Amino acid sequence: MGAWGLGVFDNDEAGDFLWEVEEGEASRKIVGAMVRVVTTFGYLEAPEAVRGLAAAALVASRRDPGVFRAGNEETGVSATLPALPFYAAYLARLTISRVISRSELADLWDEAGELEDWRDDARRYLKVL
Image 1 (cartoon, rainbow, N blue to C red):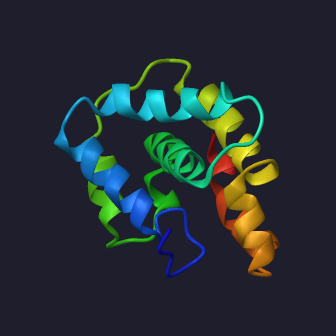
Image 2: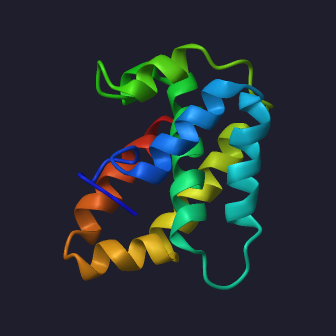
């Protein structure tokens, strides 16, 4: 995974996910990414964790568009999202909690010595959910 910052969207996998969401069937792709996270038993691999976290962040942005930094690509995607299912916020909370606590992604940030900073960034989405 190529990452250039701590943010949820500061990596190639999340960028690819955004592109896929923009291509269509956004609601299905967002919900699907989160369902894969919360239904994975055992070790959650980094690509699935990144996609689930990106999906959860998009759900959070529906409640508070200000959760994204202005001018980023995800801001534009968030503004064009269709309505999401009523359970999307609950699923997003479960997804974020799972990813920041038990996943390869969390292990990678721990190895880099930036686990708590990364978790703090991810937790800001929880605050609006």
